[in-house]
Image (cartoon, rainbow, N blue to C red):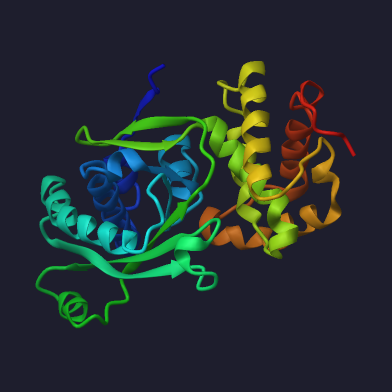
Length: 298
């Protein structure tokens, strides 16, 4: 079965940031990076966009983010970081030129392996954190970039060994195609992240906001809900989490989900009521077809 292709008006997304010169240049850089991945083999078939940038491009989320989050099928071997870096540095100038951003220099700045212990290649869920630097030609920014001192960077986070059942294809402005999480996997991934807040001792206020936006999608029918549950259980099992219908009733999950809620004012201006959003997100979770699974309800 072929994967759906969704046309994304990336150029329009970039232009919406034009009133803010810093955000505008940042979005141009993000467009260059996404096109670089899309035009490069094997990155264009081994990497899948997820996270806030996908939310903004495919689901019109107003939440602002400059981090590019990806899952990859590439194997976490010893030199995979250098391989990805070389491929990107070859593609970035070409993508900038083809997109009409000849005045913008974009290159990889640094790459970090995670975790440090155990060794990267032996970790169950290793990741790479790349910093992508950018500068306008003929400015002090270019001088700082050449000296390795630039402060204009975006983060490119790549996760390995993440379960991924379904994906969609994004057709970017100009025709390049980029693989991305399907709606099903995006919803399941965000619920998994909510559940894992307790064991990871992290607060993730963005997941409730994003899920509240996603679950009103008119594509979510009974079949989609069944697929979400299937994907959720697979993702949770890979992290040694045993989800049940009542898992979100854990008060610690709710506390962590709402702990930094108002900080989204910087991104959204007006923040929706957390209690309303959490209630809708929790109800959708409980209404998944748990009765069709063998997962015990606790």
